[in-house]
Image (tube, rainbow, N blue to C red; front, side, top):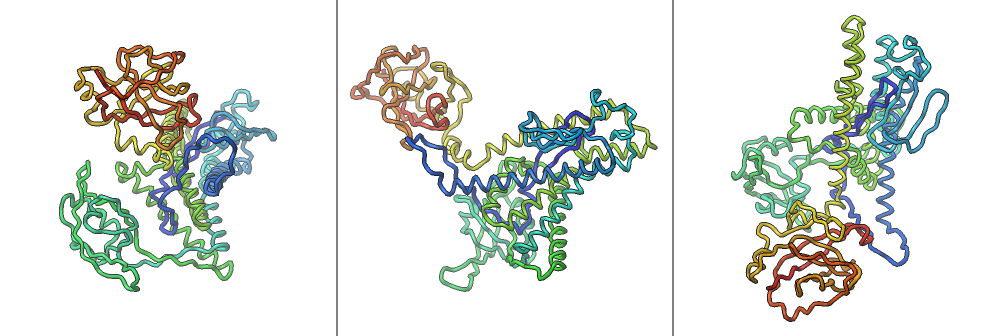
Length: 561
């Protein structure tokens, strides 16, 4: 759900983008399974032309971001135009929050594009003492009758609904509308390696046709509930499987034993989706296009609002699917790369999400403002005390901003190209959680889990010194050893050859003098070392020491008498 906020005062009231888009995708919208990998740049001696994949990625991200910005612009324009049409004073029109990247003034209104992409706002000079308007000016928003205020506050939602319909109408006229025909069974698009499904013989592309104890044609929710309720129990299934070189599919009987998750539910490690065939329908005339657009609009609206309802009814299970603008743009970029009609659907779904979330009666959202206006009407026109109203809205704004920033950080860390760079560390290492300072630089130390062999190796060689910190020496082919006990050194080689042979790593031990960069480099002799531990560590290079701040290196700690 995307949400923006209509500010009833001259002070910008934040809004946020928090989308349940992943859980509300219409089945017609086919997304690629994986994001394309984005690799960190390596040092090069001369500029090179950007690869086609990178250019395509930049273009698709720009397309998705433009769609998102246009949707927020439409929402705020609805508020703005409704206010202007009723002669209500408006002071600001802003897309985003925080510092202004660009601004200009036209008449009494300041227009701005701001740095934080968490929505937008329309500002009113109701509480601005420098506006020059008298507190009892009849054209201030707070002094207008209830119908006028309801019109202004609800106009943003109405604008998004109209925009969503126009997008679907344009899709029908240009590329056509996808129509799905439901087929028997449940499709298995993906099976995780090593999962219960893989061990039971289930393959990607299989169609689950029957499960004892369910209807002859099971649905995705029925199968999910059955699997969750069957941890460590045998679940017989009948699947339809394609045969290479054959036109017909074969029927296969399998038995799955779901694993038990941490929360006690069964899990088999598959992706399930309805089994359907999609065809594209193109209208013959404008009337046909209208019928197709109305049908698609009705279907998508029901899907989005039902997804919102499920989010609140099963929040503990669906909270992780709520995403911010980073995730929305990432998904939109994949959609833009996949198909033109997918981008139409993406824009329509985001519009409907924005409308749905803004109808919620929560502070800092349009629905919260509508609720306060309706409460005033129910009180016979007696206004809610200004201090109470501002307290409610301010608390809601703070919560919304915190949620929005959390979603941005979380979604950024969940981007595929970031997860890929950290996946090796996450799988094979645990972070000690301590920061060490060596030569004025802070480093994170990763140690093998569960029992660090460094301690064992040192004990075998009559030493109790434990590896404490990692420093980076880039100016010498070997670690400067004159300030440390001889032979206690570490050599290194880069994982992908991204560091020159002359750059090495140093491993100072507890209570040993920290080496100086000015010490004359001395190459230690490894011939006399009889005990080399199996320690493998990771160090992250800072930007000041290497052009690539995410470069990871191998190290071996040498532990002797």
